[in-house]
Image: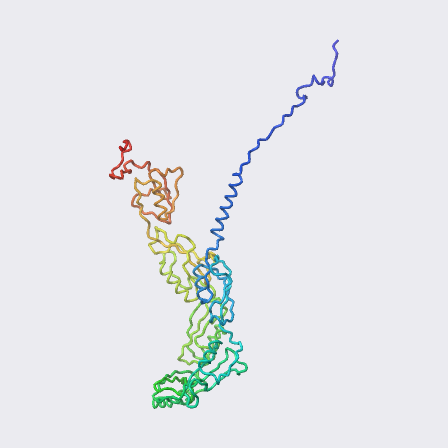
Length: 516
């Protein structure tokens, strides 16, 4: 009887099934790629190129800072407009200066010759002229001669000091006759005080006339005196509430001074009581209308755009002066800090004349609108199928800082227009069967004609041109910058007879070999 084996005893080492046999582990080595220096160099070079391009086109300071010191403020304004400098970064700090006259640049925060961008922030010192409130020591003027007095006035830049000469029978030539401090005392004298110094011209020669006091005298009296003494009269008129009609308000040469026969005496004669002009710059539109109606004054209005919050920007007659019914009083009124093209009757844009729009911009600058044709795109002219030469093809509107605007809405006072103008109704297609695709691409690029090259096009084969609708462009047809064309080589190879012998201008037969 054979020996029976249980299940477990069958699992001895030598009798184990394949699934229970011990697995053999074989290590797998990963393939290592060799390190090469160029693998790091290429990304670094590309990064440097990108950084350079960004710097060159966007960050480079490519505007040279001029030297404005000693120049007028208007030259800064011209520079800002010429280079499109953002006005928000331009600041003027007013200061008194003995060296520079009023409205002259005294300093600048950026050194001349430095490179700046159009968003530069720069501060300019702007002269107010000498300080009128600066105290000035007064020398012993009565014992000085005219040359020394003139030098003292010039050295201290005295704003309201006059040195005049007059004949005198008692004071020798170049000596002081009188010193007149008119609105301040000698002890409190400042640069802005009114001072008149009268210096002797010596004894009056024959033919001189002593001027009388004509104030509040009739015009007829002055005319009679002038005729007797051979003096020329220059008469102007002015309204006055204090002096009656035809009586003298003032005279150019004071009483008891002398003048030569044949010289001119200017007198101002009263036109009677007029209307005192108010300060219109502090009045509203309704207040001005009421004043005009109540005083029967002739007021003409000149319109200007301005960022000021005042309704009246300027008035032709100063407040406190008097005017009559026949006088014209001109007020410059504020139209606001923005405008609409339609309100200013701008000429037609699309299809309109470029030159008419250019002239309109010049007219607007006289009304306070800083309007310029200042293109932000490279192309300013295109060949057009729809518009004749000189007509506007497209218009875009921008603020001076480059922000694009909707031309049909309200526009700021610093508006810029980007205008594309027609160069004419197309350029004539002159390609022949002898021209290759390369020749055609060169022709289109030189004439700024948009195009696409069809895939798999051989540039050495015969050129073929279609419009976007698939119509073939033939010799003599016109093509336009405002359309796009398709370039291909479906015309086949360039004929052999297109290649000529440069010595004979005869076609070269490609089947023959040229002899030496």
